[in-house]
Every structure is written in structure tokens, then in C-alpha cells.
Image (cartoon, rainbow, N blue to C red):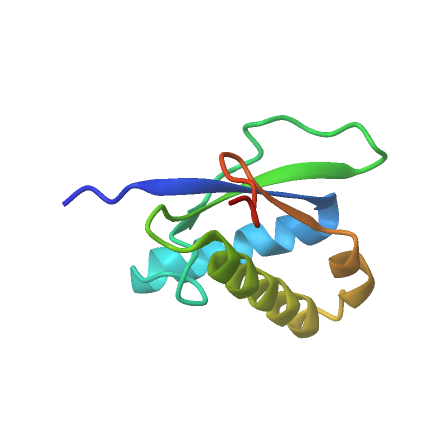
Length: 107
């Protein structure tokens, strides 16, 4: 059964996104389940570094069937949890979450 996925891009401080990558990747590999009920996977920084003094872009994957607004809320909760666990609240505030193929709130 192939699951359609949507790409979500995180842009922010490289050191925080490295922790996000490691945390989500380890969880998905270990359990075979989504992280925070929505994140099905995470990719290395294939999109390329954003040259804004140690900022980068990190792709996440969520089910395409998930409502974008609900997915954004769960992703925000996941990022908050990771920042709390690693005492990186300031870095977390700099992270922008964008959907590669969706405009949230568009009707």
C-alpha cells in the first residue's frame, strides 16, 4: 500500500534542524510509526543550504490525506517538544514551517 506524502519544509538554524532530523529519523526507524502522529519521515538537507549564516532547509514528510492546518499544528507541537528536550527554545522560534504544495487558509 503506497501512501501519498506531502513535503513540508522547515527553514531555520542549522544546529536545531540537525537535532530535529536526528530525533525524528531515530523515532521513525526504531518504531516504524509517525513522529507526533503526523511526520512519516525526514530527509537530509537535499534541497541545499540556505546561505543565511548557518541556516538550512529540512524536508519533512506527512500523509497527503492530512489536513494542512492540522498537520502544521502537530508539526509545531513536535518542534516545541524537541526544543524543550534540548533546551533550544530560542532556536525553535526562528523556524519557519511551509508546505511545498499548499497554501494554508486558501479557499
